[in-house]
Image (cartoon, rainbow, N blue to C red; front, side):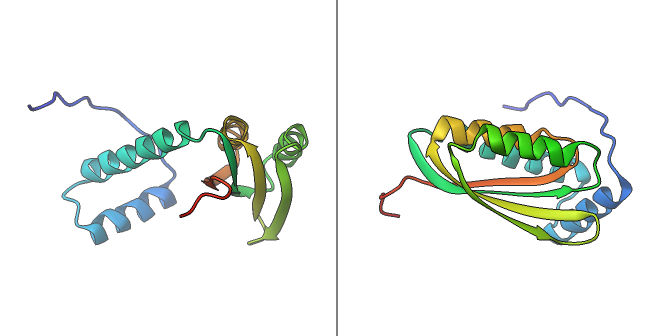
Length: 140
C-alpha cells in the first residue's frame, strides 16, 4: 500500500547538513529524503525503546553540550540535584574549549531514569544525549 508523502521544510546549520550529506553518500541513499526518513525511523525506534524502560534500572546517561550556552550549566546542575536520588555519580570531561561531555551513572526506577534523560535532551545547547540501561541482575 503506497502512502501519500508530506513535504516539510527543515532549517539546519550548514556543518550539520554537510555531515549528513557525507553519511547519506557513504550509505548509498538515493536522496536526502531517504536519509531523513531513515533517521526519523531510528529516532522513533529509540523513543519506543525508551518508553519501555520500566522497573528497576542501572545505566548511564551520556551527554555532550556547549558549556558556553547561557544558563545551560546551571540548568544541568539543577536537574542533577533534583534527581540526586537516582544519579549516583558523574564524570565530566572537556572535549574542546567550547564542548564538554558528562556521563551520569544512574540507578533507580525506569520512569525516573527516562524523565531525567528527556529533561536533559530538551535543554538548549545539549548536542547529544544517549541512555543505556540494564535490569540489575538480569542475564544479558
